[in-house]
Image 1 (cartoon, rainbow, N blue to C red):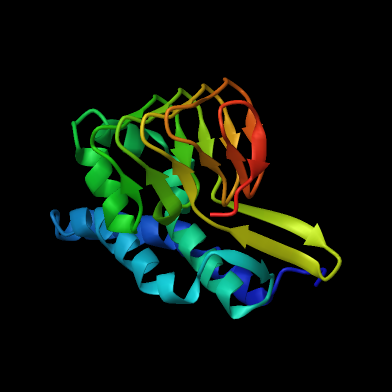
Image 2: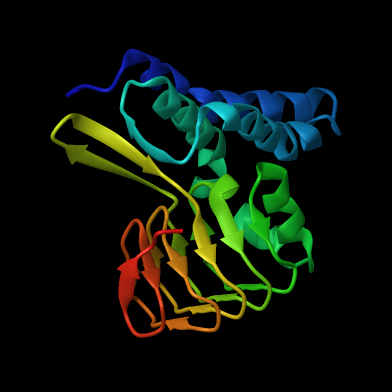
Amino acid sequence: MSRVPWTWAVVAWWPPLWLALGAWLGAVTGWWAVPWFLILPPLLVRSLAPWAPAGRHAVGSWPAWCWWCQYQVQLPFNRLPWCEELLRLLPGASSLWLALWGGRLSPLAHWGPGARATDRQWVRVQAGAVLGAGALLGTHAVLHADEGWVVLVGPVTIEAGAVVGARCVLGPGSSVAAGTMLPATRPLPPGQRWNGRGRERDHG
């Protein structure tokens, strides 16, 4: 498929409309803006989870469209990362926040300044893990294959005691083995596992 489906373009209007309605709710009702901004988006993402599984989906397919909806719901937080940075000032708040989306972040893990995840529902960070400043957990990738455009979606797993160096980029379905360190700026392509010595195909 060479063109983006029109339904994807419609969903792309979610971020500005959501922000505008949230501002209106805040002006009219005050406190109702809080659940609108902080509770509704995670609930929407979780409600779509059964139809947006991990895997390889053709653009235009139902799973890919459901993932696109999930991504657009999260886009305001991706564009305005300072919102989550404020949450991380409170111990444990980031873990609860990601749990709302369906992700898993141990309260005993360290999330460095500027570290980001594109799809919060696919974050898997275990106890004692460290994410360096500016690391990116890229839990989706859009690729052009023989059959056309496809979306790869999958979890990024940082196992217990693992360290992800500053400005590393990890692709969907990748993982860092327990107790190992992925050096700063080192990319980890989709489906690869860092074992401490190099990359290998992740069969888990």
